[in-house]
Image (cartoon, rainbow, N blue to C red; front, side, top):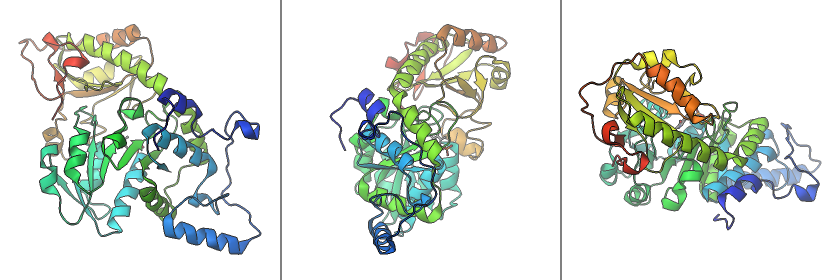
Length: 405
Ligand SMILES: *Cc1c(COP(=O)(O)O)cnc(C)c1O
C-alpha cells in the first residue's frame, strides 16, 4: 500500500495508529498463546476463512501460531515502509525464505533461478535442495533463458552479501515475466531501496540485522501482496516458524530509528571507504552505488590477522547492529558454500566484510588502522579492478564504484 507519509514518519507511526485512542503510548505486548471464545461456531467460521485465504482472522487469533497482535504491528509497519500490501514475520530470515520455497513447492513449482552471491545459508538451502527445490545459478542476463515451466521463484540479493554486488532490479523483474522475483533487501533496507516499487513481488529481510538493529533479536519477514501473504501465513501456521511477540515488539521499536541509524551508519561507512581506498595495505574496496553501512575490502596481508587485532570493532558474524562488526566471509558467513562456487561468486579468501555502526568514525578508523598495521602493503600499486570495486589509488568513494552488472 503506497503511503502518502514520508518514510521517517511511517517509521515512528506505522503499526501504532490505534494506540492514542486506546490511551496508550508504547505498544502492548500480547504474550497469549491461546484466546478464549464462548462461540465455537464462530471460531469454526474463522478457521475456515483462514484455511481459504490465509487472511488474518478478524478479532483475536484463535491460537498463537495463527497470528499475534504484537507481531502484526511490526508486520503492518514493515509493509508500509516497503510499500507493499502486507508482510508476514517469521522466527528468522531462513524461516522466512523456507516458507516462500514451501509456498511455491506446494504448487509443484520447485525450480528456482538464482544469482550468486547470496547469503551463505540461502545459497546452501537452494544448492542442497533441503526443501526439495532445484536451483539453476545464472547471472542476471541469463535469467530469462533459465526459466522453465516449473520455475517457481527467481531470487537475487542487491547489494549482495558479502561482496555488495548490485543487480538492476527493474531489469531483472522484467526478465522474470510472471515468475515471482524475490529480492533480499536485508543490506539496503527500505531506507535506501524499495524493491517492490522496482517490480519484485517478494521482499525478504533477515530482520535480525538492520530492522532489529541492536543485535538482540532474531527474525525474518517477507513483504508482499496480500494474496502471497495469505499463503505464507498458511505455511507459517502449518510449519510453525512463528516470531515470538517480544521479538515483534523489539522489531517495531527498532523500525522507529531505522532511517536515522541507516543514514548515520552509512555516512560513517562512506568515510571509511574513502580512507581504506587510499590505504596501500588494502588492495580493493567494495561499496555499492546506493551506499549503505556495509563495506567489504581485500587486504594485501593476511585477513585473519586483521580479525585477530581489532579491539573496538567486534569480530563477529551478523550485521546491522549499532556497533561495528567485522568478519571473514570465507571462514564464517559463506563457509557452507563450496569453495569453488564461493570464489566464483567473487568471495575471495582475502575479503573482509564490515558492518559499520554508529561509533565515532575517527575511533573506528584508529582501530582499523592499528589492526591493519602489521599487514604488508600491496607494493606494486596494481589493483584488481572489476565489479563493484574501487581501485584504492585513484578512488573517489561511492560515486565512482562500478555496478557489478
Ligand atoms: C543473515 C541473512 C539472512 C538469514 O537471516 P537469519 O535471520 O540469520 O536467518 C538472509 N539474507 C541475508 C542477506 C542475510 O544477511
